[in-house]
Image (cartoon, rainbow, N blue to C red):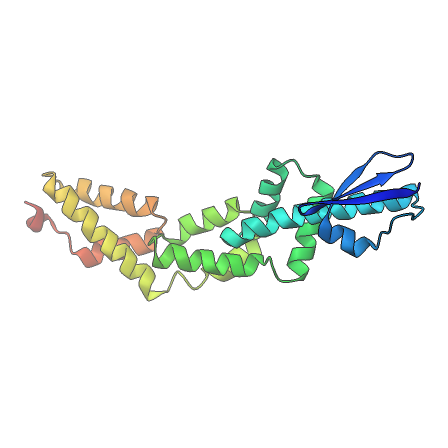
Length: 213
């Protein structure tokens, strides 16, 4: 097939052939393809150009997502699938991004843990659950969450949240010792703290029968 003309439209190139449909590709893809007017291009070569263009489009979309915030590989794949891109091309792009260190599940998980502990004051159980939802492997989750359990800020967060919750419970007039402990336990468990941390916090809050009545 003879390439009759090459037209530029903004960031796209229109390739017009003598006996083939026109092809629209990105300008960067065109530059890498080394195409010239009058070239005799085989069907196989056209398929390669189309594939390169599809990969370029998916990669551009991936970079737009990554420029907004870090993503896990699983998250990024899901977003690209929702845009209608082919699964095989998505896998190719994600693998390339991982090889070039643009995408790293371990780094993502580390940053996620740090944010959830320092800013959201969440416990290890909730953080672990969220990482699973984001497609992070068990090995990575185990490694990045191991330090949380003994991290001083983890206990400090739980104590701070426990004190705040206790004040709210008491302001509502609750005086039953067991109910107060139960509400504190359920609240902190909902924030993702382990039972050991919760009992530790309740002990530090020094809730006693004589203080409640």
